[in-house]
Amino acid sequence: MLFFIFTSFSGCEKVSNELNNKIFPIVDINNQYGCVINYVNMQTDSVYLINSEEEFKKYNTCEGNPQIDFSLKTFLLAFGKTTSGISNISKELSLKNNIYYLNVDIQLNDATVPQGWNIAVITDKIKSSHVILNVNQHF
Image 1 (cartoon, rainbow, N blue to C red):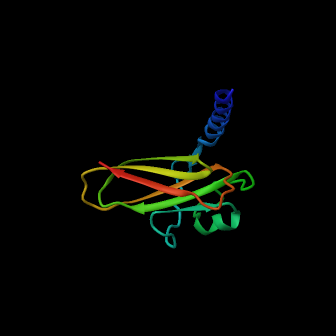
Image 2 (cartoon, rainbow, N blue to C red):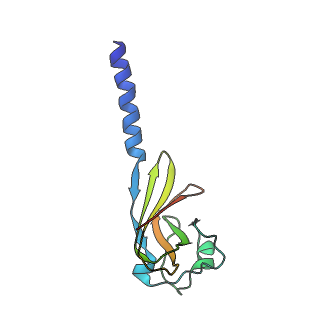
Image 3 (tube, one colour):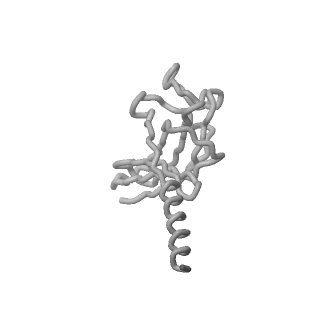
């Protein structure tokens, strides 16, 4: 009987964790709209969570694009620098243990010129007050 009760509780926890581990779809506005974002007043290696039109206007330089419904969507901005050239950048937004993560994987190349990188994506509404930025730079 005791074994049955233990199995029941551990099964419930597993379901809860599966629902919490989620990858979110993102739309990269750099690729889709060709926009240039104003990164002047942003801190390097930080992610900015934007949930209003007023905040968005501080960073967006494309007049009228993209149109974002901030009642349903969130705009995320991140940027940083490398000590080498960049071959490829991939990004993923995930939720684990009730914490949002913007994971950025940067594949470097042999160029000895430092380069900046930036991420500007639209995703489903994030109601949390922050997102953790994880940057992995490698050759």
